[in-house]
Length: 79
View 1 (tube, helix red, strand yellow):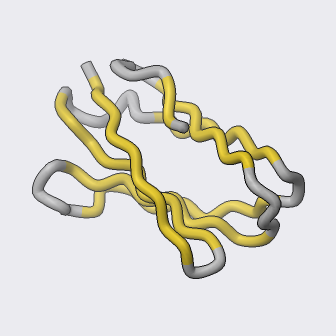
View 2 (view 1 turned 90 degrees about the horizontal axis):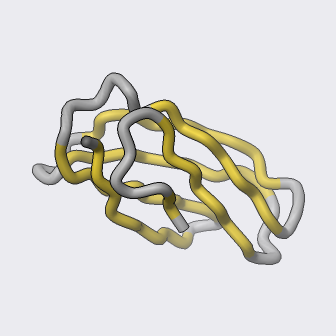
């Protein structure tokens, strides 16, 4: 889950599953260009991670989360 959307400063990524270990968080623009990549560690069943998006231009973006070879994506809007 990615929230809030739209946003102008910070997005929260909430992940609820039993998998633990390294996560890759990747923000791309609508053309598929990678804007930002972060790697974090998930040690509990739930993780909430904040990402500063204040420097991004207004528009639509995609947050891709990869963990243990599985990926999920969610759209968000920066105003």
